Length: 444
Figure 1: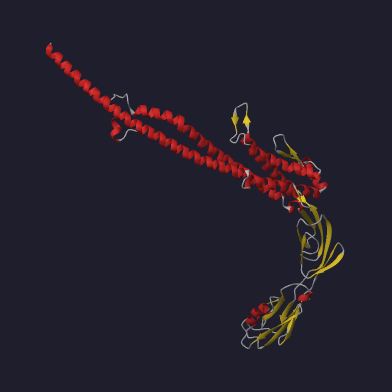
Figure 2: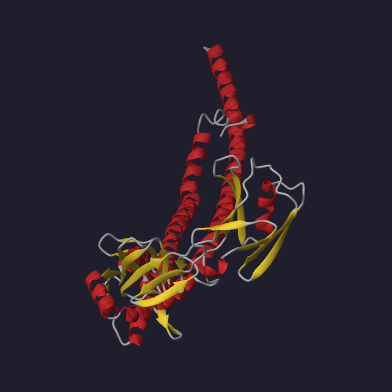
């Protein structure tokens, strides 16, 4: 602390007035005035950290609640096939059951090959008109004397609105290059008729509708992908033959989701409890001990489940959720599975709601919104209070430190003045003593 003209403090008073004394006095004041403020700042920081942990737990619970509000998780189906004539994709709308689909014929495209062959791809096609008809509509392709078969092939798709595709194929022989026209879509209405100045032959049987039976009922479709046969099934015909389709309820996603929900719910409830607890034995308290708003938030989460059960005429235990004394939940998977087998719709109605009535997860979403997102919710209120406290404490610390520094700066200057006076008096006393000693020595 000794600087400048004050660096000799203590010399005059032979150490009676020194910086060591000032430092000890200042440390005592720092411990009694500054340290308590620093402790409060540290506590404020710990509360901020704990609040961040609680926010993460709330967000985690909200994620699981939103996931469990998805209708597909309650209607998930699994599909098994015996046979390979089809492939199937299933959505939640599919009804459980077993069906037989027998593919008699796949839907096909029409293919037309030019009768005339050409020596090379850039050979001139010859001037004329190619009239094409498909799906009840006609198109005229005008060919000039300078157009090659390659040029014309490139124009066909564009000039037929994409309904007919054209390509060149090398079949071998003296004039190997032939133009091939193919319908873009399958089905009987997509047969191509070629007239005009150019002749084409049909390759194969032409465009045909798919033909199959579904549980013995004869059905036709223009394509091989069928989305409109029955709700929830998208069927692709792969080849001729019979396949048995079995659709079953798949509860694995729901059960896994419920486990994650319970884990997140319990983590948050325990976090709330730890933050507000007071242990009488160890005399230790949580960082938010006594905060009634946090306790109210935990109660709101529990009430969302209990109230839903009361309005449905059931208990939450009926759906495999058992409330524990500490506010956490225990999941009884076997009981939930039994309820899903007995009445899956009732399970969905309880958790997701029905006919304008909120389910458990709707109520939980509302409770979480009030806790985390609402402008006057507990999380935002706590964060604001902590931020305000942090600013206030920092200002308080700066002001107290300045007052302390000023006080001891003044004290140091006073000590220096006193030290100088004492030093001067000591010097005068020493001089006087020397004079007396000299006088006495002369008289001997």
